Amino acid sequence: MILKILAEMYVTLLGPVIAGIVNSIWCKSGMFKRLQVPMDGGRNFVDGRRIFGDNKTWKGFLGYIICNVICMVLWGLVCDVAQLEAYNMFYEKVANTPVNNLIIGLLLGIAYGVFELPNSFLKRRLGVVPGKSVSGAWKAFFVFFDQADSVFGCVLVVCFFAPMTIGFYLLYVVVGGVTHILINMLLYACKLRKNMF
Image (tube, rainbow, N blue to C red; front, side):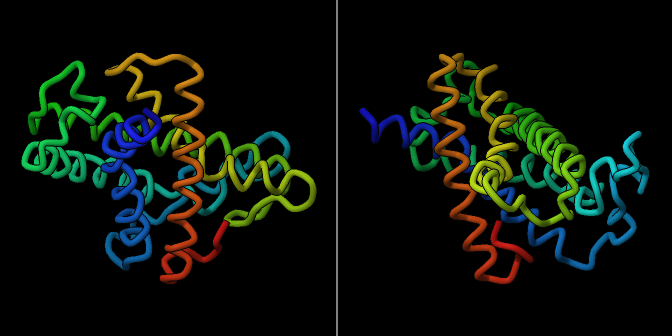
């Protein structure tokens, strides 16, 4: 039973996992440098600190959307050929078609990017340097929250297609957050991330 649940979780959100990796490569590339501008436009909040910081750029945000759309369309084809549709929670309510997968990818990309913003906003209020984590007693919490923020959004999109209990939602977020931490460690080892956490 546990293995089936994990299989469904990973099959359902493997598209955004791959999209996140591709977006890391996209953000490191020299393409479309004009989009490498902060989403907050360099403006400060009422406390005199930046709203989101330099690391939340339009290039990264649009990259999340584009990469998720492409990855979900391709992942839908793989699910069809590999007969994985029964494990993909999106297909409980809609058919596995390129148009549906494009819409799902668009929703996932927007959720991925938007749900990262409150975390950045909070860290700027705490005086944390962009790209760094909180030190001290709160470090473990923020290391996990840094990786789970986008997962909260992506799993919320899954909820629209496959309603779930709050307990299942939170389990999904924990599994996604741990997976994100492991992937970031891999990206750091491959020099695609400046910091591991």
